[in-house]
Length: 122
Length: 274
Figure 1 (tube, rainbow over the protein chains, first blue to last red):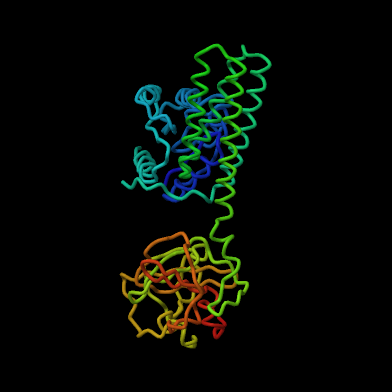
Figure 2: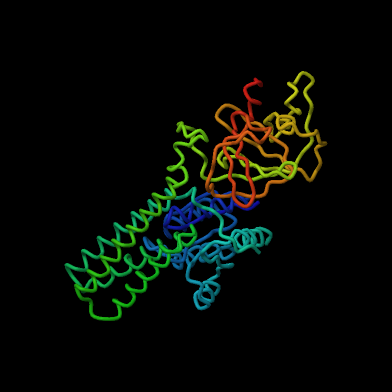
């Protein structure tokens, strides 16, 4: 069981991700509305895994939050969420330290497999 | 891996709230740009709003809305590439109105499904119209002895593999015993007896449906839970079935599906008080 922080500016996405992640037996310990909140909550809650929406539009997007979280904790396990399934973007977030990405529309199997894989990594 | 999109319509209120916020932001940015077309940074919240609506709509399976939001997003990118004109902003404003209209219509439909609105009354075979309980819009299908039945999906708490039932010495004859589900003691009703079917030993391949009603919780043993369906044409139960007193309606399409009356089942037709 992993502890997870979800960061997305859309409450619908936060709710569906929470539903999927908790349905797979993990614990969502926090939900952030924007990048700044995500960074602060990461520091406060120290989750095992973070999901970050790439395109959070208010107060610091997902990419900036990724950079700040990785700077604070280089071992952070971050999954980027995006509807933009572009190779360039995935390479960019991987270069910045993201452990993987989840594309929209959501595939429950894919999300749970990614969370499971990351939760098993020491 | 399954590519089937799960049903997230239970989060429709979150979706609507997000969409309303996006529309507010898009309109406010459009107004700012009409006042001062050099404020090109205002394109970002407009594009972002359409992008959010697109992503959530596709996850909900609202393809039409998702595709239209994508068109709007592309329109923003197109307008960004040329000098901004009032005509272009007006067109974007019009597209925003259209998107909001189809989104609101869709959300309204999901919140009040047509099948529920239309089934306030059921026409009896004699031609008399009686007011009846609403027929559910989603049904959980299952089989017992090769016959397909259905319960209202919202009365089904969960489906589990059949587990051992602990008999109760002084239980009514319609109760097989109880199961312990995470500390909750749930009576298991003998639905085969209610339906006048021969008794059958509970086997591991059977499934248990845990039912939840405002009055009580109960479990029944079934051969197989076959899925969920939207409720199509439904007619009143006929007298050809021995289990008639427990029926709420019948779907007669390719297969006959008998919709069970949850309250009658959990009280064994009013004969049970547990």
